[in-house]
Image (cartoon, rainbow, N blue to C red; front, side, top):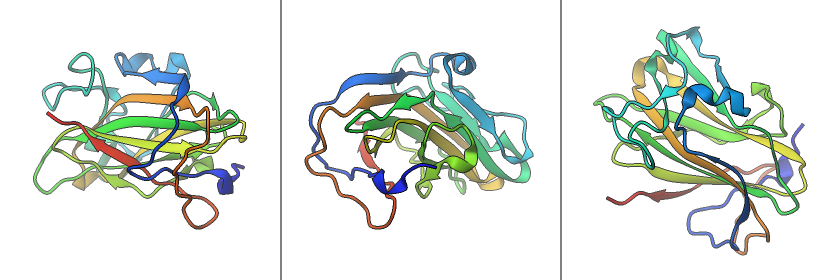
Length: 211
């Protein structure tokens, strides 16, 4: 089981020493090829729908970076009508190193009046089992541009995986995209990080894409 007390999250505006040693850099150019690279795509929505994670639809919005459709997308059809979304996108296993690792990624949703999309995210100790992930509370994904999120995991934990969970009621969801997920080693401890109260903290830093 993950040592929850050693997991900290950075808040917006933190300062951190320069990061080095990229462990993962995924631009989602080919979502169909993710499993071959060690990713886990697990749609546990109930009742099951007709879609899972798939290649981005540029008619909804363009990717944050790269080709117009180079992002991972999911929508309300992950679950049947009246169902609950529970669709997971899980990274390959990576080492937390001595000083920890930072995961950053970009989220965006398509605007539709009366609908919203929620993503939760967090870590496991390297396990693929959904029950082994410790997740933050879901965030409602913005619709007016890509927003960057970043999460930190403490060092000395051995291996880890990072997961994003598309969640919520299918009848009130629409369409969401994930782009440019990166995992990097932290060579030195963060100089101004805030450890949340309790046994484990998950939070995020955000940066909205301009233009």
